[in-house]
Length: 156
Image (cartoon, rainbow, N blue to C red):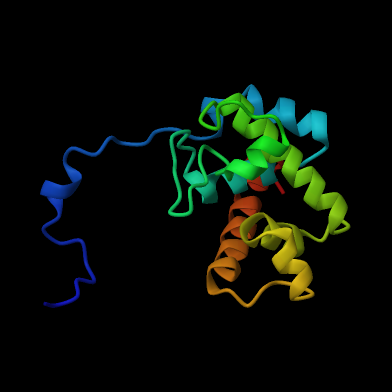
C-alpha cells in the first residue's frame, strides 16, 4: 500500500461534503457580546474558534471536545453549559475559560493558548509550553489567525 500525499482523484470523496461558508459573521451577535462581557479580544476569540472548529458548531474532536470552541465535558460543566453544540452557550463558556486562563497566566498569550489546548495543569507541570508537537502547532495557528482577524477587525 502506498501513501497518498495529494488529493488527486478525490472528487468522489468530496462531492457530497457540504461547503462550509460559516465564519465570524454567522455568530456576529455571540462573539462581541462575550468579548465585552469577559474582556477578551474578539479577534482572539475568532482565532480560537477558527483553529478549533473552523466555525463549525457541530465539530467534535478525537478526544470528545465539542462545538465551536471545542469544549470538553468538564470545562462545559464548570461554566454551566447545558448544550455544548449551542453556539451561544459554547462561545460564552469558551470565552469565560479564556478569561480564566488570561488571569491565571498573567495575560501571557503563549501560555494561555498552550493551556487552552493542553490544559493548565500541563503548562504548570512543564513550567511553560508543554513539549507536545500538537500544542506548538496549535499556538502558531491561533497566533497567525489572531493577526489575520485583528487586521480584518481593526486594520492592525
